[in-house]
Length: 166
Ligand code: 4NP
Image (cartoon, rainbow, N blue to C red; front, side, top):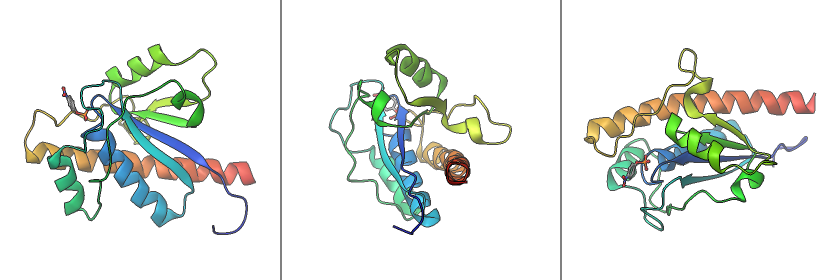
């Protein structure tokens, strides 16, 4: 704790399988939030159930590791009803993920739904392309794209926290 009023955000990152993009986003965001002293609860989940309980894809683990971040301990899970109340922000990797979330959101859900790249200048509505069927270069590209989105969200949430305490 760093004194002053604590603003606790809850951010859930969502992709299709929860083994590639959203685990990378969770890992990248955790490191960035720690560096910027942004207090938050983080997790990731998939809209699909193909990989329940699985660790991230080895290629996702490898690219994160190359950038100094360990995501190997994550386990895939599916988005569930409580997520729409437990998290303040649910951040989808692509349009299909966002549409699935909108379909599943309870009517009185409190979480705000958005896409990762919405907060990056000129990238509103753009997806993080799925690297699952790609090569190592596709994972490196996804990592770079995800980190631009993560940085944008960190800045946005830091601004929101400052406004709340003003
Ligand atoms: P992710 O990538 O949504 O970024 O985790 C995928 C992982 C698995 C599958 C599709 C995308 N799959 O079809 O099994």
